[in-house]
Length: 427
Ligand code: GDP
Ligand code: IMO
Ligand code: MG
Image (tube, rainbow, N blue to C red):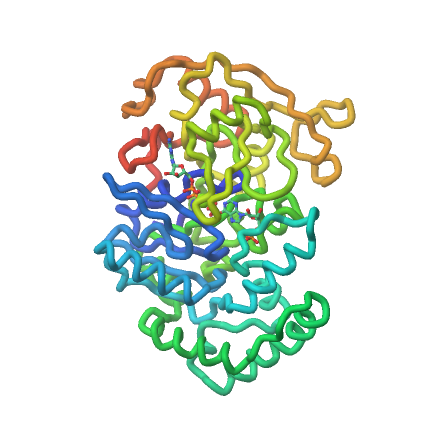
């Protein structure tokens, strides 16, 4: 059985954690391939709620091996505190594997992230402040520190000095901040290195061997398609590739091994941070979606911006990821509306446009063209099959499927593991 990718089809927070956890019982490996602890993935198991940031959601399934791939940026302090938090709750984390090629987020990356945002003022991105952008910038600039560098003190020292040389000039002269002492950083990193050593491995080799042995590997994306640095609403994006291609570069598994790409799609739309969002609501409907959907950031605690479903975005996600299926989440949140508007196209400068415009200025001007679909008032949280849903909820799902360009193979009707309608099996 080849590999599967599970990724966000919108601007993140679609319910990837729950979907990954649900599949965890049938897969051998769950692998994060990009991003870092900017992610906040919620998993609800019985009466227990877990918020995972850096660790793959498969960590909660004992049979599953969780893997942090080379494409992830790892803050070792966060990693250790997340691991000990789970251990205190009785979760066994001993199977975790971390790529020696993954880059590290160090305290100077978080500092640079925060001061840069402050300096941007009104033009800020609204990052999570976790050092993600600066860590990826160092990787691309070839002054990054990798996990494997923690095990060669002299190399580590040279690399930290090289990385801080320029940064200290900028921190002091541009941002009026105190310079960071490389020796202190090296000492701190060496301490973390000792603690994470048992997990560090050649994950590319392990994953490819596993696939050769017919094991099932699930790649879990962080963030979402519209936050992708290449395919998202640049510059209001994250600094990695959550789209399907990122699963290959971020793990060292070739595209020929991937058989299924599942897009996690919320039945409405949310976004955290700055940037265009055509269907955003500023009225009581937006407030109601936020309240009923519990739309508050898992990582930063910020209120999420909320709006109606946007079909051109779903179609775009199908296209740039080669989606084979959708997992539609949070359908239950829409219960109680008499009419549910769905954005079917945009109006840009007086013209109707069916697809997401590639031009950023056009997207900033895009006004949604809505079609109203009839709502339902019955509680759907106990529905187990598609036929259990009220007719109007069935019609809403079918309409979204038609507009989005890939079959909807599962539907979320509540946050819990069991609150899911499975239509086509994923594995
Ligand atoms: P992720 O970042 O994509 O993993 O998503 P988040 O965890 O940030 O946000 C999704 C939220 O929706 C979490 O609070 C989940 O527990 C919750 N959730 C996931 N699926 C469903 C669903 O089908 N219905 C409801 N009501 N909540 C859901
Ligand atoms: P999950 O995996 C929603 C957003 C931030 C900001 C932009 C850049 O839970 O879906 P960064 O710190 O990455 O440089 O911030 O990206 N962002 C997310 N929004 N869900 C996430 O993760 C996000 N991770 C980053 O709000 O707008
Ligand atoms: Mg999230």
